View 1 (tube, one colour):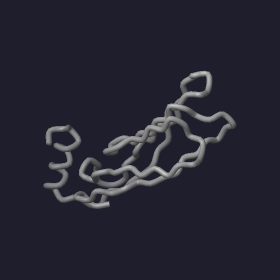
View 2 (spheres, one colour; view 1 turned 90 degrees about the horizontal axis):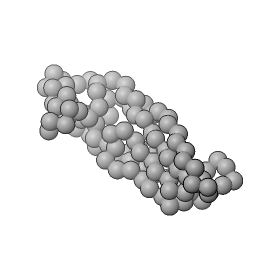
View 3 (cartoon, helix red, strand yellow; view 1 turned 45 degrees about the vertical axis):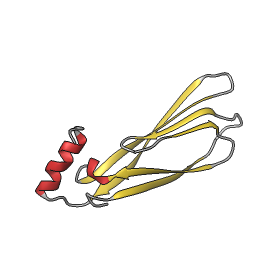
View 4 (tube, helix red, strand yellow; view 1 turned 60 degrees about the vertical axis):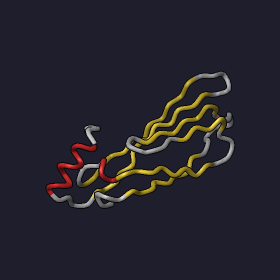
Length: 105
C-alpha cells in the first residue's frame, strides 16, 4: 500500500456456535466504517475502507474488535490482528502522516 492510497480490507465472519449472536458489531482500528448486524445467522463478507496516510511506514498492526450478545444478553468480545504494510515514505509524507495520525488535519 502507498501513502496516498485508499484501500479495502475484506474478510468473512461466521458464527462458531449453535446460538445465534445478536447485536453484532465489527470494528477495525483506523477504518472509515464499522458494521452492525442485528443477528449473525449466515456467514457475512465485510469490506472496510482505509486511508493509507494514517498508517506508519512499514508493517502496521490493525486490531479487529468483534462484540456480540447471546440469547441471554450476555456480552462477548473477541480481538484479533491483521497486518498491513505501507511502502517507503518520503520525508514530507512522514511529516504529513504524523499530522493525520494526531488528528491535526
